[in-house]
Every structure is written in structure tokens, then in C-alpha cells.
Image (cartoon, rainbow, N blue to C red; front, side, top):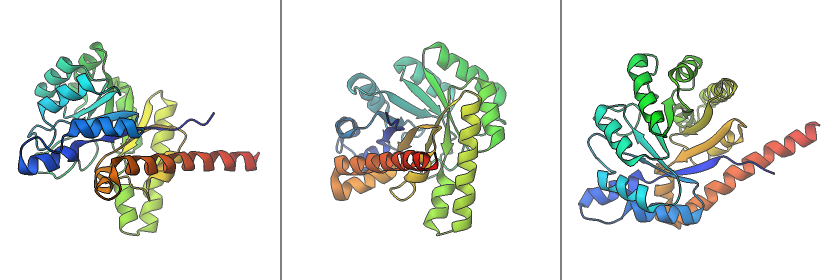
Amino acid sequence: MLTLPRLGVNIDHVATIRNARGGRHPDPVRAAHQAVEAGADGITAHLREDRRHISDLDIARLKSEVTRPLNLEMAPTDEMLEIALRHVPNACCLVPERREERTTEGGLDVAGARSDLKDFIARLKDAGIRVSLFIEPDMRAVETSMTLGADIVELHTGAYCEAALKDDAAGFADEFKRIATAASQADAVGLEVHAGHGLTYNTVGRVAALPEITELNIGHFLIGEALFVGLNGAITRMRNLIEEARLEVRRRARQAS
């Protein structure tokens, strides 16, 4: 039986459009329901400190209304810890956050924040919440994540996707190698391996083909594509590309044997 990575759909930027004008529309929770109907395995939402897109009410509604697991992206702060413990999502993905950034611009500095993160992670896990750390694909970050007690690492694919946009073949190859190496290492030390940030139809296949990757979290691109083909169409195509990538790996393995 073919095992596919789960697809987590991030609905943050539905809220971005809503907040540009105020009011209730478009409703990110409605988008989450549609994503589930289209085949999303989970819903991801990032509650930022400045509430620039997802709101506290959105998180409460997502947790109570949506039938798929909720992955709450958040900074490792006291405020966010209290919110997570109140709502108890399926998972929390700890990410770096700076108020001036447009989007999450890199992985969490797990080594630099080691002592604070260990206790933070323990409190989430004690509440039954799975903990993911959004990290750069490098060996030190993987090893530190394991010692901190994380369940999962989500490998930041931003540099890989940027290299693709710039038609930088050498950089693209180097960044993919970093992701593949980090995924293998994380799996070897018992961490579940996810990946995300900037993935598109053109870049998802190689990452999805890595056997260690169990989940891909994709948002901005899917919401953008939904303007042209609808959310169902965008998610369906993304899932098809993920499946094709895994099928190609299987075909090659059979030919090699």
C-alpha cells in the first residue's frame, strides 16, 4: 500500500484577506471546512502575537468545529502557552516570530533558546499536545530538537523554494540535499519529519518523494491558487502531485530490484 505524506492546509491568508477590510468575510473556518472536504488531512493556523491574520476566536472555532487535527503554529511565549493549554490542539509547531517580518523567515534557533524551550515543550506534552519545532535543515538543529524532547521537526523549505524561483540550479540542488540529509537524520533519531514553507506545484514533488517526510504543511500558495481554480481544485492538484512523486519512487525501486 502506498503511504503518502499527510497534507496540512494553512488557512492563515484567508484571514489576511478578511482583515484587510474588517468584518467576517472571507471566513477562515469556512475555508478549513472546504479544505477538509477537498482532502486535507489537517488544518494549520498561526496565531501571531500581533494577530495580523488568525484571531483568538478563529482558533477557538477551528478547535471546536473542524473534524481534522489542528496544528497551531505559535511563538514560544507565555501568552501563546496559555492559549495552547486552554484549547489543546492536536499539535503545536513552535516557530520564530518577529513583528516586522512579512512571514516566518527561517527556522527556530533551538540551540540558542535551549533551556527555555525544554520546559516549554514539556508543559505542552504534559497536556497531551504533540510538539513540533520549525527548524532549518541542519544536523545541529535536528540533534538539539531531539534532546529538547520534541516529537516532530518541521524542516524549513524556504531557501529551497527561493532557489527554484531564482532558477539557481546549484543552490536548488544544495538546498534539497540539506533537506534530504536532515530528514534522514531526524528519522534516525526517532523524530517525526514534516516540511513546509513556500512549497508550490513546482517544488513539492522532490520533497514529497523523501520517504522520511510524513507531513507537508502548505498555505500561501494554495490560497493564492484558489483564486483561480477554487480551493478544492488547488488542494486536489497538490495531493495528486504528492502521490505522483511517491509513485515514481516506488517505480524506480522496482526497476532497480
